[in-house]
Length: 203
Image (cartoon, rainbow, N blue to C red; front, side):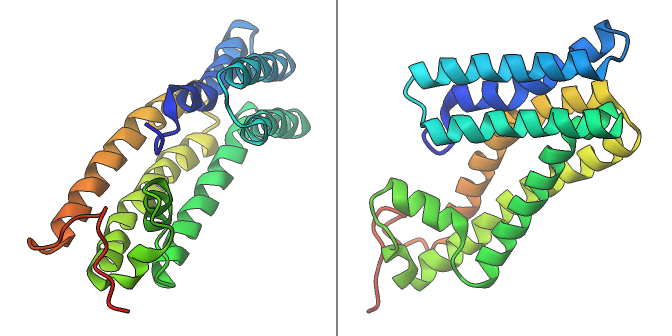
């Protein structure tokens, strides 16, 4: 649950875009009304998350993403541009994960190692390093899947479809990604390996 960010992060990522798309339909395609609603909903969710102990900086970034998306749509006059910030964030995230694999600092290892209190000891285990690298490609696939769906919908100005895709490709896709990457990680380790909690360091 900590790796996923909890249910609150799923609400934070999916509800404002849905609110934007819903109001866009109900208000006869008013970007102003849709943008104001999305920002207001994002602010309410932010307050709710703060009362549940969320980090203020994380809440601020989430709200800024909604605000910037609304401003972009207002500036261009295209409602679908509200989702451009999410397209960009997925592209950057996917690139970051690929670079981390290429330089042998796979982000999955950094995340899980931190959660397990190992810091970077896992990097001194060649088998664990290789396994984290392979499993990290699953996360790259997550971002590429979103881009493969979001970009054509954005190009078609399919606002409602983008809202639905945002929900489907948030929490459900992340859960699938966690399960799949765990399977890849386990399969990549030799049968005699003690597991991710016990790095076999060579130096």
